[in-house]
Figure 1 (spheres, rainbow, N blue to C red):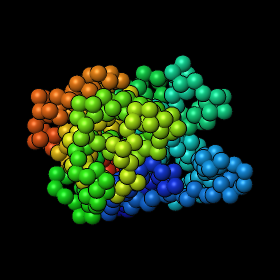
Figure 2 (figure 1 turned 180 degrees about the vertical axis):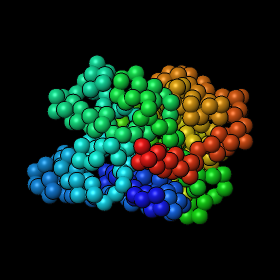
Figure 3 (figure 1 turned 180 degrees about the horizontal axis):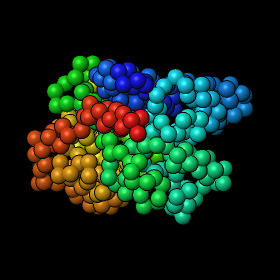
Length: 381
């Protein structure tokens, strides 16, 4: 990079077949935000496809074969592609920390990683909390060592920063705070392309509460279903819309046991405009997670003007501040009482303007500007 030439920055993104909408959004929004600074940076998305090698073999379960192809990509094909890209760019930005192993194939002094949370390394950093097989811990340690080698480690919240420092993962001078943003589709007014009305036809016009997130354990769908079952006893007309989680057998059994099948709607993967429509129409958006790195649904829901009830976690307090209502993690009775009071009007949510104002603090433009400045400073050093 010469003083007059724009920075050539590679954004190493998750393969789309991984199926992580939040990581797709982070990479695509950053790419778009950086495109607004053409005189300073030329950003290129690097995103190899996930090949169907093991998935073509007979006799393996679909999920097992898919995960095998994921591992081959993460630790084979993608690092090989990173090696080929070393000389083409001035700096490299790994969008998702679970791909930090790519740092081993890149010039570490010119590479940064965005650390969304510490889940990928929990089995190494806190084995008592997350015991895993030896092969899994070896994989996690390889990823963690990549993060430790990176010249910059970005984080979205001070809560994640505190965890990184508490475990001695990264020196403070290498940490950069770069909060995530809200896409323009998430707003109080309807967005072009919003087809949420047709998706909600099966509800027959009945009110609903909304959960957006995967079915991984820390999202606590078990709490979500228990809370909704108890809440429905008080509000029989209420429905639950859950977006983004392919339920596990245990979760499906819980839904059946609680008799929620006729009240649960799980739309397929949605575009952002339609998801925004679901937020706008919800009586409340529920975030019962026991751990989060940021909590994108919190600010997306607030940007749409929806009331949010979230787990009382430091990270969600940091993001939602006074714009949300909070309940203790896993306390079903407290969640039911809070939501019952909200739905019946006994406890109003924080004022709509407070909710919208909080969401306005988070923009992808600011995120992209922070990332760009960090790499400019790095290369000057």
